[in-house]
Image 1 (cartoon, rainbow, N blue to C red):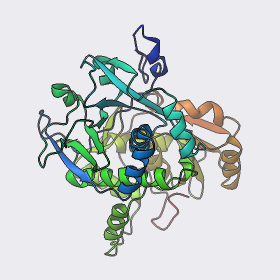
Image 2: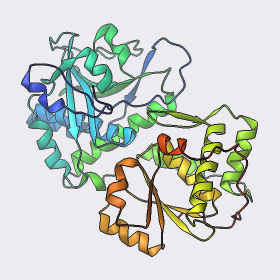
Image 3: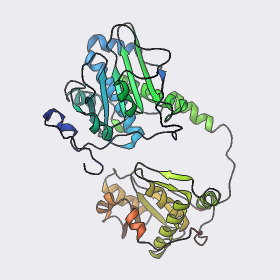
Image 4: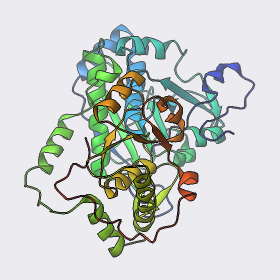
Length: 398
């Protein structure tokens, strides 16, 4: 299996659309407190339950597609990728635990929700694309369940979702839906050893928000979706109820203090690696010393072009240590737009991920791909602060 993709080794041509799929695994929100899996659940308050009931009477398949799309959009935002996959199950279906139905959605920012609904439906009958449970472990760790049984299966206390019995342990989050003429109910099951109650409630509110967007704004594009729920707005407002204490120091100096206090504590992580405060401080100092040799210094701007990865944070701190300000670049933006931004800030150096280096070559004089191999070739550093080149009043980023 190639790094970063999932190969589906089955003769059944119905799963060819999964070939090359990018793993879609939502990371744990909390550090594991034990090795066991413990599921609990929260009911999702549906703002448009009546719309779902009306849609059910008109087109039952559209209800399942709508809920699957809403979950796909949640993963699109929380995982941070356009290629998302998740397991699918109907409680009355007869699939074995060996072959697991999977839904894969490829998001494009310009596509309208209504068109995306049609595209998801054109994949064929939901849940007809199966992969082995072994392949599934590499592909995804969330699932959507539709309860088609007679009578409600929802209980006040849920120890395990009705997905795959003991196989459910490989899933971190499961969305279970029961939409009938008499009952419109959606429940989020989650592993409380990986997701806190507050985080589960935030995810649940995002599910409802996206269901509302799909049901009421089918002509909006993926790029223009509103993911912010009422709960999110209240939470943001609560964060800002008290003025933040002013700290008259540079950001990288405060981070260096954390290095002295807890050098081995995890500072930043992504899907592939984690860096302690000591690692972050030492690596960013090595990179800062290097970009200083390229002419970076106080009053300058250094664009950064990365996906969600630890090297983006390393570069932010390195630029600050060099006395400059960083400028986040969206790797999905047109190259002409990035070139114009680079000219606006008179950038001579751009730090980026290896995958974006080629497209950025015409944008600035020095295109520096940053990864572990590149850092490994830089001179060692003891983590001591670079000579103070910036003041706390200087720009940090634009």
